[in-house]
Each structure stands twice: as structure tokens, then as C-alpha cells.
Length: 427
Image (cartoon, rainbow, N blue to C red; front, side):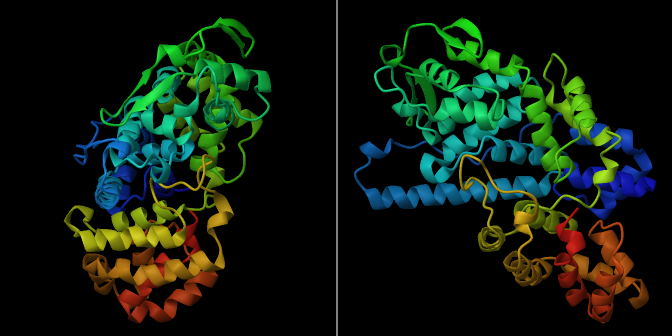
């Protein structure tokens, strides 16, 4: 790989979609500096100004409540779309990773404010030690509501959160027992959500008081002890390494050697940023080039960024149009289909999704006159190369080039087809 291909590959994976100008700067700075800049901690963006509102049971006007909730949901959607499109670092992509990992849906939580609060937890804790991160998530109001923590009492234990916590969020299948699920559920009893305040709290009389034996340790009495056991468990680091590799590295599972290198980088401090840095510096990482399918959100946001569309200047109708594209492709932020999150890999490469991308591309091109002008300024024989530069694609296959070549005379059509190519769907 050339230096430009190396930094392009890194930025395509760490961010939502590098622009040609960003790749120019990265090529000049070098891979090491590019990675450091992308992974640098940043200030959290200003929030969308949502209110928690009254609890549903206290609002007599159901229709008014539903409309108010829909307005806040839409505001949150528009706010995050703007943040994703504006961010040139790894920050928002990592937030999106955690959103898919700790998959929580607004459709059940029914509160944009609580979903935003969960996002703030991702931003505050998701770059460092996973111990405090797990502690914070066990207190997260949206997650408690999503996985029925409100119903988990000493008299009627509910195991949903304890089971998913170990299976999907921290350890993986085979690294805990049914006894651990029951013991974990007991430690989580009594936690409830105050919707008006937007907080969670422990109700002592609903909490099981007896110590339990959990993950081989006897005497665990509270959720912090539970969280610490999960963070220190031998399966935790390899589990996260595999999850990061599948979202940032390759559609195939990491090798044992690559997993060990990522676990070593994670270290006793359980440093997420160190693990991500090790991933993109891993000797097996370049070999994954071209083997990771873009999720619909990545495709839409990446196109917005690379076509030079200023999401901050788009009106509500235009932002709604972008959200509709993601919905048609099967992925809408804040609405994962299940606690397992969204699918990955070739699940997004269906005939139907290809048709949606082809139908959506003209709407994106309409919002990008500067990108069209860039192609118009290039000589006709050079327009395929200009398109590849604009979309940060290393090369076209002969088959794709043969399809694109006749459209070179029409920059709008060429750009539309470029967004629908296999090379743009798989990065």
C-alpha cells in the first residue's frame, strides 16, 4: 500500500468518511500522527436541549404527549446526524459503535432526553477504562427501561439485564452460567428510573440484601462489585477485541495472534483508545482492506461528508430526507431492532439495499453542487480518477470502470453512479 492508501484506509475505518482534503493532510502528516489526531480526546458537542418532561402516567393528554415525544425524537435525530457529519475524528464513530454495542431503542424507552443522556455516558466513559464505563451503564436510565430493570425486584427478579449484560455487552456466550445470571439479577434488583428527573436510583426495600456468589466470587453485594467482576474477567478483553475488530477491522473474526495483541494493548487499565490504536496499527489490519461493508449510517454520513454537504446548513426537510434514506436502508439511529444491535457484513449487501442506494444517490448529489463542480472541472478522461479522489476510493475495478466510463460526460450522473458502486459500499 502507498502512504496515501494507508492513511485513507485508517481514516475510512476510524471515521465516518474522510474527505479528499483530510486525506491530503493525513498523507503529509503520516500514519502515526493521523492516528493520534483521530483518536485524540475531544470536548463533547453541545446538546440538543431536550427536556425529560412529566412521566407518561401523569400526562392525561395522550395525543399531545405522543406529538411532543415525536418532536423531541426528531430533534435528537437531526442533532446527531449533524454531529456525525461535522466530526472528522474517531469520536462520533466510536459513539455510534457503543450505541450498537449497548443497543437501546427509543421506541421502548420513549424519551429522547434519556437516550441523549446515554450518549453522554458513551462519550464520557467510552474512550477509557471499561470498569467505570460498566458501572455507569448499570445506572443508565435508558438501559434500565430497555431491559426491564424497573421490574426487577427482590420478590420478582427479572433476569433480562443481567443476561444481556454478560452475553452481549461484556463477556460473550459461554463465559457465565445460569447461576451467574440469577445472582447478577439479584444484584440489580431495586434500581428504578425517575423519568421526571431523568435519573436512576436504588430503592432499598426492593433490593435483595443477601450477598451472592457471582462469576466465582462469593460475597458480592452491589452493582459496583458486579461491574468490577465483569471488567476484570478473563473473557472481557478478548470479547471486546473481537467486537472492535468486526466493526473496525474486518467482517471476519480476528486471528488469535491479533486478538492477543489487542488484549495486551488494552492492558490492566482496560484502555479502549489503546485497543483501537493497536487495532489500526496491527500488522493484520492492512490485509483487511476492502473487506468491511459500510453500515447504512456510515454510507449516508460518509457521503454527506465527502460530497462537502454542510449538514449544519440543511433545513429540517433535507435532514428528514437523509433520515429517510437510512430508514429505507434498514438502519435508523436510536432504533436498533433488538438488544443484539444491527446486523453486519453482507447483510447490508442485498439487491433491495443496492436499489435504495441507487435511488438515494441523486438526492445526495442534489445537495452537493460543489462536488459536481469538482468533476466538471476535470477533463473528461480524468473524471473517473477525480471521482475516486472525491469519494476516497483507492481504485476502481475494471468492471466498475467500464460501467462508469460512459457517464463521464455527465458529472451528476457519474457522481450518482459512484455512490452506488461496490467500491463505495465496501471499504
